[in-house]
Amino acid sequence: MSDSDLYCFECRRETVIIVDHAAGDAICSECGLVLEARSIDESSEWRTFSDDTNDNDPNRVGGPTNPLLSNGGLSTIITKSSGTRSGSLFSEIGRLQNRMSHSASDQALIRAFGKIGDMADRLGLVNTIKDRANELYKRLDEKSAKSRNQDAIFAACIYIACRQENAPRTIKEICTAACGVTKKDLGRARTFIEKQLGVETGFLVEMGSIHAADFVKRFCSALGLNLSTVKAVQRIVEKCEEFDIRNTPISIAAAVIYVIVQQSDNSKTIKDVASSTGVGESTIRSVAKVVEDKLSSSGLF
Image (cartoon, rainbow, N blue to C red; front, side):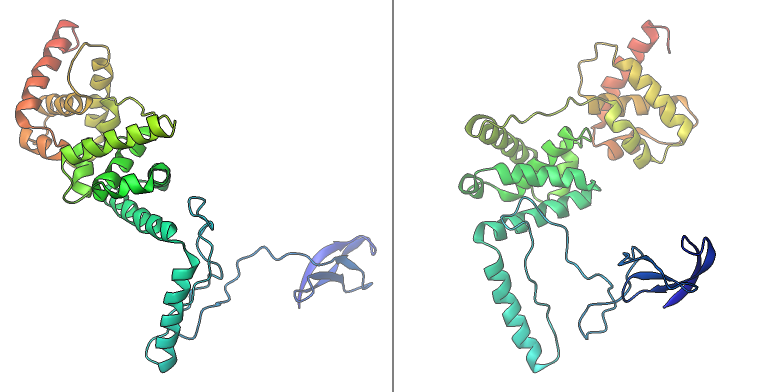
């Protein structure tokens, strides 16, 4: 029990209130009136419910539910105990329990979601993009998807999810995160997903359009440019949207960064820009010339 000062409506003044945490009652010490019954303690509970392995983790619940799994991802987990004879028995029971808790399809999905999560972590993506990629993979026909390059399918799901969440990543970035996946593999996997979801299941795979501005902050951050330079790049990139520059948004972003860096006192070279953006040096030079010509003709350069 603990004491605190609260207003008692029976005594009509502030009195010492005795709080019985076991029963959840707040009792006036003057008249004995129960002011509040079965109150809920909403503060943190730091009691540990772990086993005897010196694990002081205070969590008493498992992970969040996963609506993409048949049982919502909720199942009993038997923890392992090492170093004892009973520990090996618990390990065997846990293995059998995990096998029975998830169907074969759910186990395959869990492995796939883990691979997608690993790729997304390498790219520094947020959970909303991971969830969108998982949802895309879940919608695919299991038998058809299994016959394909699985890493390429995972990478394509992430690529499409990034586009849909307006946080696009370059194909080179995606391929780097998905070790061993080539641009051709990614392109084929993306076409397969669009065909599977769009034609066979009627699910329209919509992807937002890519703009050069989507890549500016990330590219500038990789180059370590200061805030004033970043703002200058953003202004020029916005102007380039008005020009008829028929190059990819990634190339335009890289070219504008190179143009601004050349005009400032920054020591970054075209090799640095190419390395940070993944765009070839010759492409940067050619697009940069187009950008400079457009800016000069409009009186902005």
